[in-house]
Length: 378
Image 1 (tube, rainbow, N blue to C red):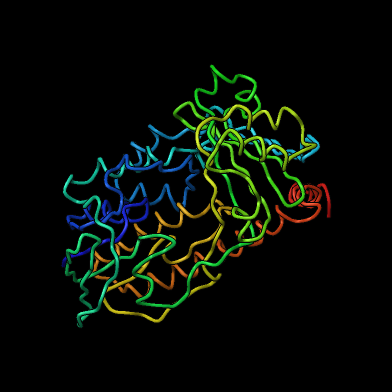
Image 2 (image 1 turned 135 degrees about the vertical axis):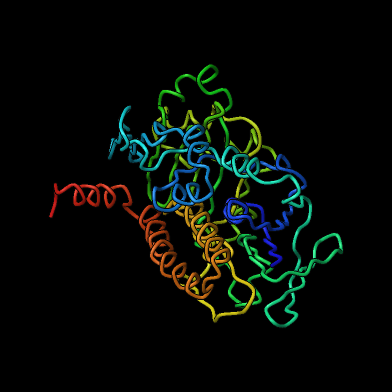
């Protein structure tokens, strides 16, 4: 059986690696020209039952533990006035520290790529569309004009999947907010105050309709994230010159006027471009009728905002589970139903958390929520 995977992200590569571990090869078509073609993003916390489970099935648990940072789970949460709302410190010893350890996305991708034959991934080959040939077979059209025919096709090609139209007309919709990412380089040496504020893991602060957070990465950088409730055309109407990062940083600080100076100093410590992007999501609970010889995984199937922290975990679990079904000759529809059932509550949590953290009086609502969870309030 010839298997083609559209997309070489974590979900697609996990699927390819688990297949390979069972003696089945797949072709991965990836739009990036090389593994280093673009910034792959920051750090990810992999859960025991999703991302870590998938890496165990891939035979890569030891490799994962070598790159993971349990201390990255440390977290402090403040309101926009500087009042501490919550703090979590990871134990230095014991298995409990492996609950959701952080690992840099590029390191995870390299771990998976190094465990695959070099010829598995066809770099610079974006899938543009796919057409059914009958009997579950498909022809895959690539950006360079080439085509591939396969017995099973896996759409792991993310938010703007070119495989999804085989199932549904659903497209990602704007969630009502934009995110921005900036980077502090050589944080410990060049910016010790910012480094101390973030600590070993992550820092977050919540205001009305906006958040400011920062996360330590394993490469010595700290990634600073801003999230802002705004209109969909905000980038065009805001007047912020995002093509001039230094001026953009000044304008962004003005949006957070009144927040503690030590928080805003995180923005002063950043350098390089400002990445700005709309938050989008597929409909919560999206499902489709079974279609022979093809399925979707990860963001192609259940894109959600980052407010649940589940996107990569679900994609990797999807990829590993699907690979096991294929090598065992199982029912792909049962896999899809399990994926639907797993993704729907995560997507709903993501949508609910976005509304909570970007609402009026968000910090007080979050404080009450944590107090209730800890038993301090009924």
